[in-house]
Length: 212
Length: 162
Image 1 (tube, rainbow over the protein chains, first blue to last red):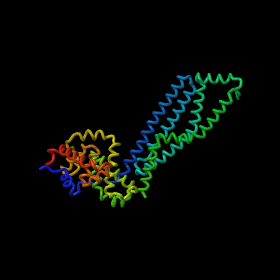
Image 2: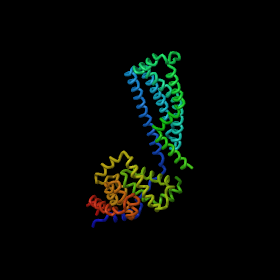
Image 3: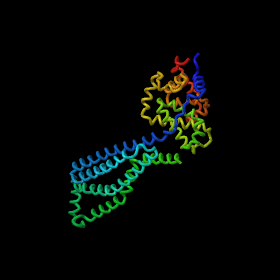
Image 4: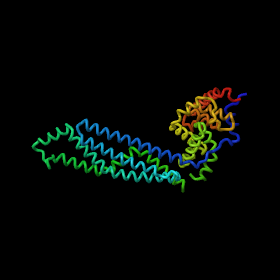
């Protein structure tokens, strides 16, 4: 006679000895490896993205006649990738043989250092990028025409041969960009790595609690 | 997670967690990952236990939620689906000493994710109300659903268990 599923279930688990419970000692090892691998992957994709962006800036600049700005932006983005890649190589120097907590903590310290270094670079990056944008505009045909128009206006006040209104606007904007370069960088960082950085913090917090 | 918490609050219910995790995994490695994640989430969410339900019921709900979330995340879910389409009992599936239980698990894994949860809770003798509460559905159609699942399981097991 066929057994019902209820009977199979009940009789199958009567002794409960089959229910071998896994050990919990490996609880965070996998998580640590997984999160760092994810960071590495994200860094890698980001590098490819910036490389592509650098190339796109060069091509767009050249196609619009903004040779200097296009090349400058390309070099600027290229430098950003080189700095980032150089720093990324330091991940491999973190001691793998250490405990999950020590490994993750070392990675967290590395990340904080990396963010600070990159933050310093971005303080130069954003103002330079903005400057190239302005130069790029002036290099284009539309920019030249606009400049020509304003220069031909007898009411235009000039300073060292440049219209004061334009010059002062650019300087004010440049100062704003310089002042806000750090918050801009943080915003950029949060948009790309915010989610995974939060996970890393949570994981470290859990592990610290576990150690206590 | 403290050892005391694990021993007092999780270990007595480890059987429940094992049964649920087994239904959603196909390898020992995945099973251990799922089990550990469930334990971790129980520990992390323990403050959310509001004592409106029993601790065991809360563990059922949390275990199912964790397993379903992990299953969705898992890239191997497609592989899992293709594996479970083969009703044969692979070596990897022979995790229990009782052959009938192994066969039953193979059949259960061929059900949809929610049907697996429903039948596991039914086999653990939860009431329709409790099942509906844990799954988050209307208790009125639980009975019909269980009847349908049992018929499907019977077909799947037909001739395999005497």
